[in-house]
Image (cartoon, rainbow, N blue to C red; front, side):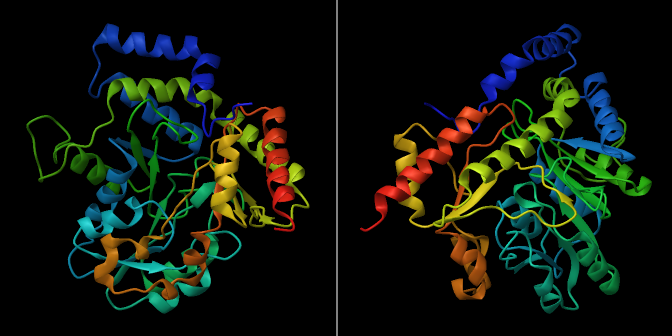
Length: 372
């Protein structure tokens, strides 16, 4: 049996009529940059998510950069973020001129360890960017309290946590603003790069919009120097066509995760993902910790099961951040996870038969290694 890591083809086939109609309408109107398709998606996403302003942009990376620039973060400042994430969470800090300050991950939930944050705050700290990794929300009450205590901006990185919740509040609604990615493989994904910012702050929403559109709200009326970061009409149309299905898809991911945990229960060589109490984990990824991880991944691939590693090297261990002078021992949890974490196939259209096959194959691998 072949089990792809993500299957965007089956998703397209299931809603083909909606996608094809949405794309055809954009082509018929030649609304390729801005216009009604973009405005419509922003309004629909905001209404469904429960937020006042949605500012679309070219990708999730840009959304983080735009937020920080418009909050005035720059040279001489520090921004705290998590050690294990995609590089966008950190490189955008550097792009503003500020310095990324890393915090190790929680040993159970793999998101930023709230207990270690305050020790990393200095007089230069301006913001904290928690990353809701894998679809698992951070302890936002703790982090918001820290931000309030130290007068810091709280910026949420929600690239992997569309419609996740912590104590019935959705990811992105705790801070001053939040970043979303609609990369094709995300829970809500475009057919190319796409992203957005959400905020309930009217003034910031105007500044975000202006900066992302060359510093102008109206063409040729540039009130500042900005950047070119626009969501194109085709991507907006695709996202609008998918949006009515996202809540159903989220529930399917949760059910699939529950099936994985059921079928993998009792396999002593792996650690199943923990769900933080009072959270709704949207399971962008289903990540296990596994003994002999690399051998297991090779074995699964040989049986037609695709896997991935998120991420093979924790950020401060990358050459890009060598200048910060860290050693792997500075981040013992995330460094240790590098050789253990393995992301199994996860998407709404996974069947119970596929999940059972993955679990049975993992059991077979470890049965074959006993006594070696």
